[in-house]
Image (cartoon, rainbow, N blue to C red; front, side, top):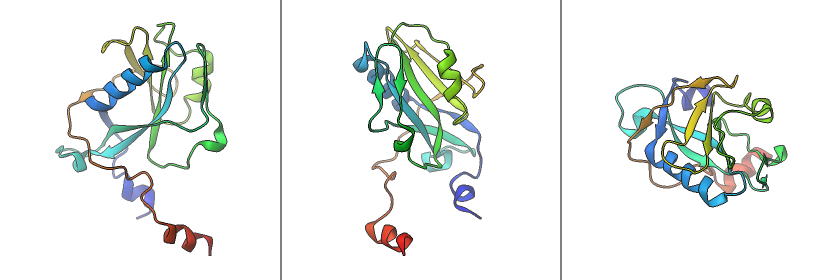
Amino acid sequence: MGLFDALFRSSEILGIAEETLEFAIESSEAAHPDEYMGFLRGTESRELGLDRDGLVITDVLVVPGTETNSVSATVRTSQIPNDVKALGSVHSHPNGVISPSDADLETFGRGSVHVIIGAPYRRTDWKAFDSRGQPTTLNVIDVELPEGDDFFDFTQADIDEDLQ
């Protein structure tokens, strides 16, 4: 079983954690009038105490060096981590239009679910889209998020070993 298989026994996305959605909405509002941009990461549902296989979106990864303004967010591709946990993206539309632009569609190939949050950033001001830009259902799940951050779950010794 490879690393990818070990991380994801099921690729089905069951939904997004309530706290994660709230974080993304609050971050979008805080970035206004500029766009907010991040990548969605997931956790195996069983690790969250759910009785079915699949993934729950639990994290938003903001890439350093992301440049934003009122009409776009640009991520430097050299700064995007090679992260097998990336499930899609989240970004805001300060103009309140909650549908993908042509520029959005060009970036939707990376991942299977993309969330757009629109001004005025209420709990109902978001929608999910698939990689083709078609609306999709993304359930909001009330789960206890795991403590800590395992994104950097390697040590200097691991890095040194890889370099040898």
